[in-house]
Length: 227
Image 1: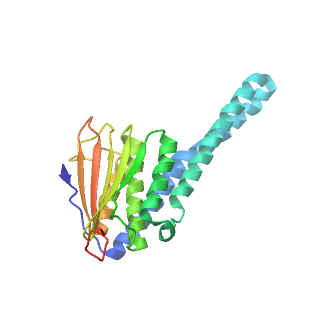
Image 2: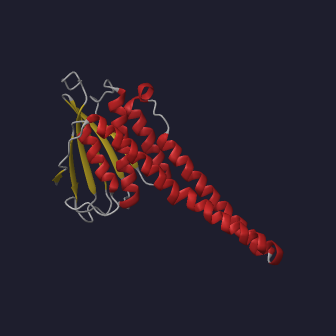
Image 3: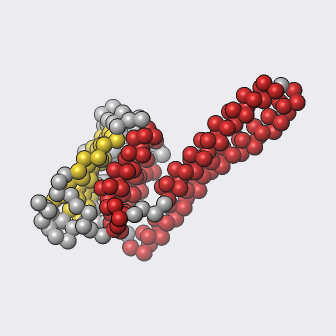
């Protein structure tokens, strides 16, 4: 178990920092994904052009491979658009939005991604905070996808007084929470976002035993448990 040791930020500076980090993330994903795929396709098309004159059967096979790469690039672009699209939180609420997100990941990953919500959890707090919590879930799920090799993921919500308790856990390969592994930039971003929301983060994980991220954020004006 480890306390996140969350930093503090000036509101304006942190807002600018988030925007710039998001731009860098998008640029990195476009470069590593669709841009490289399209560059590779351009080279393959030159090969196909030559094969059409010498080996038509091989040319057909290369066309099939090229088409597969095009489908992959299109799916990568669609995923980026999905990540960036405005979220109608004020229409559907945080829980429904997270359920939709988890359903998408479940279909893409072919593993269970469950959402468990206590009866006292409601969406009667600001849409801005709901979007922020949604982005936290999204970032943690993306991190699990990249690094955890999980077979099951659970996202849960509970309300206690002014706070919403949100937990994201998986049964993947885990890590030492005292030493954030290389490439786990998402965890750093999650810590900063939670600090901005005046919340707390507790990370429980060990090698071979999965991970559990427990987040507590004050969101409700009414301090009752909503029961």
